[in-house]
Image (cartoon, rainbow, N blue to C red; front, side, top):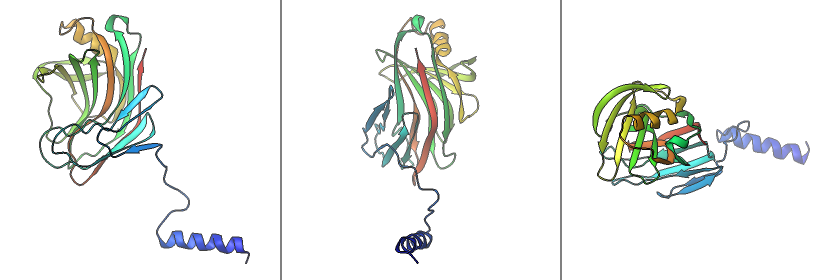
Length: 232
């Protein structure tokens, strides 16, 4: 037996003994961070770990690319939002000047033992107005403000709430049923809000997509298989 073959067989036996698959090595992330304010920019996007609440636990963000990323989060089963890990893209155009503002997404999220929503945050450039688009929600979470109406716009049917958090106006579009993938015409939604007279021809600033997490006790994975934001 050659020395090369003997080494290969020894390595294979060790891998089998340890329960390691030699055929499918784990894919290494190009970036990760345990810093609560960890950020990474690529391809016009910025990823934020964004653990901003109180009473939070550990959270790790990772990325294979700016559109394929996720977090492992272990936040205690208490009230209050702990984090909003997200990917962000800047628009910088008035509503009347928007060419395209849209997104597609595909996520894998926990559905039990958690309290969170998978949501877009669409901001005016002065941060005075915030449109939230809740694509799915699990556990004891709910939107700010009071129910205004039910509307079908942007490719989905929503219960629409309006309120203020003390810092800015919030318009929450809560999808009437959960979905883990789809496309959203964000331009149509901001125009719908403008046409209601809730704000004027504001400049759209940051468009964000991520997970607003209240609790994920024991550690849960929130995976963005793919999410794109097109602003032009």
